Image (cartoon, rainbow over all chains, first blue to last red; front, side):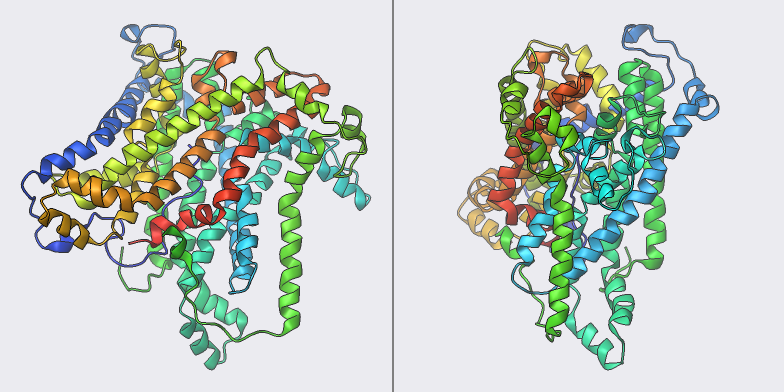
Amino acid sequence: MALTTAPDPTRRGTGSVRPDANRRGTGRIRHGEGLAGYVFLSPWLVGLMGITALPMLLSLYLSFTNYDILTPLSEVEWVGLANYERMFTSDPSWWHSVRVTLSFALIAVPLKLAAALGVALLLNRAWRGVGLFRGLFYLPSLLGGSVALAIVWVNMFNRDGAFNSFLALFGIQGKPWVNDPDWALETLMVLAIWQFGAPMVIFLAGLKQVPTELYEAAAVDGAGKFRQFVNVTLPMLSPVIFFNLVLETINGFQGFTAAFVLSNGTGGPVDSTLMYTLNLYITGFTNLEMGYASAMAWVFLIAIAIITVIFFSTGRFWVHYSDGEDR
Amino acid sequence: MVADTVAPNRATRPQRPRSRSWLRLVVLLAIVAVVLYPLFWMIGTSVKSQEEIVNNIGLLPRNFTPGNYTDGWTNFDVSFARFFLNSAMVSLLTLVGNAVSCLLAAYAFARLRFRLRGLWFAVMIGTLLLPGHVLIVPQYILFRSLGLVGAEWPYLPLLIPQFLATEAFFVFLMVQFMRGIPRELDEAARIDGANAFGIFRHVILPLSRPALVTTAIFSFIWTWNDFFRQLVFLSDLSDYTVPVALTLFIDSTSQSAVGPMFAMAVLSLLPVFGFFVAFQRMLVEGINTSGLKG
């Protein structure tokens, strides 16, 4: 699912991720309201059980089997930890997809956020035309996840593409970047960075929350523009940076469409664009090794959970909440 | 209104020298050029002849070739009209499903008190970060065992989750929005004899329109652009949606399909672009709504 945007952390204060039950005293359940609550909640509850929880349990079970879609579920064979063993010890393409995904996220996400913050700082002044620029920069975030844009990208970085025409202006002889195992993933990183608009919009909203008095106080103390940026803007913006970092990293791990289009669903050239989710798709739906694919999905889920926990536990040391509340 | 959430609330800062703001404008325009170049290049390529696609490095074609559009439209055994109809149907039904089911769940979380509410809310927040790719294999198996994959009308596996509020982002967005609706209105309705359903019908529903519109727009655009689930669940050519059909161009090895492929790529982006033009403010600010409201 293309979760390009998500709730925003610029909202400070209590209870932003908690229902407001405690706001009004004991939270005693009014007569009939408990029933009404479950009536309104029922579609979500059915979805949680049937579309999320049950599939998760099923996939956990299948990850210990050799299930392929062709044999009936009742006849699957329990193989214990064999799938996990194979993944960690004897599947070079799995390790390769881990490396591809990590390098994609580690390079593309920081560059994308840096671009987003840089442009947000350029735009962060009340003047006419800000809205227009903001909209234009946001447009790629709306279009960029599509198959159409992936097709454009692949052709742009192909032998006769626009990028080589641009290089030719400087007398540089280009090459078909998307067919070169050393460069194919880099073209996908550029596509990700091109979509800097969504985090930029969130940065802009965060910048507006920084009290002007802080800059004035810093200026009075003799701080120049750079010192103001380091000592005022960055700390005040750290919750938003944190939020964007978590969100974009998790999104980055899930990149699928562009890698699929570039490689026609193979992860090529020479597995250079074999993103984890693409590998998962090939394993489950091309090779029909659904037991093994389930094990890959669970490792992916646990990895994302661990990374999220690492983010949140290290965030305590560098994320500054102005209301002094410890989350 | 949603539009109010990002209204500038800073005091004006001292003006910088004029030259600095000119420099800023030049830098911004340069970035705009880089950002928009791929889109213009796409449009230009879609009206170039096959020969020019290889030889003409400029943005504009020397020989305007609109034939790419008609060629692309009928390039496969099934016309693109069908693919567009399929995409529109899936996207619109998804929009309806998300709007209705997420609104109901959000009302429960934002306003009603019931046992285990805190637990369920925490679970909902947890699913915000759950990657959809993790669930695709078991969901496929489940829908297949129910006979819904490859059925006469194969879209149920794409739509059922959307009618069950599984898109937690929209639930969260609406919860945050509803928290901004004054509780005094609930109380007034309650004094007038309204129960939880009456309050939903007469207070929350009408006042939640901005959040509903934001949900509807994002819902449509994300589904229109979505590829992964549609790739997994659709197998018959005549059932394909636009993104899945576009990948067929990549399969065909002949170079002659590049122009028509670009033409169809341009057409596939038009609905999203239309939404962007019509609701630009709302889209940009919708991102912040969930965070800044309430």
